[in-house]
Length: 160
Image (cartoon, rainbow, N blue to C red; front, side):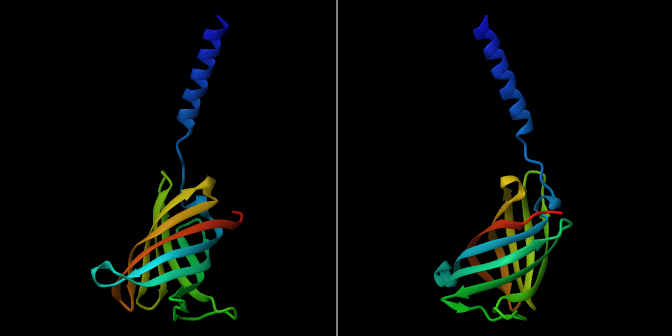
């Protein structure tokens, strides 16, 4: 009898856990400031690697689909020339938009300067404290450029 009761309780707990395990994300899930790293490659003709990318930065999500970013990114190891920068050399004035779906996937567009744009695929994890991304397409000076990069974001300030 006790074995059957234990089995029934265990099955009920698994059923309850299964019913609540679904993610429920939205733009508000990642509201706040995140530190990030990015690594990868710039690809040239025939998808040959022509540059290695390493960078760090801070991205701020407003909870309503808008973002602001500042970054310090190197290619082979020279800093990418850019727009306005702060005293530490981080590029500033980068803006964009994002959309987080209920299943915690999403996308973002970041404008890093005139004619420069990154399109990202996003996955939110760790209750909204981590975001992972890859570049899906990019423009540099208005021209398509192939990047094979990934980024990882970690929350540095809580949502209000």
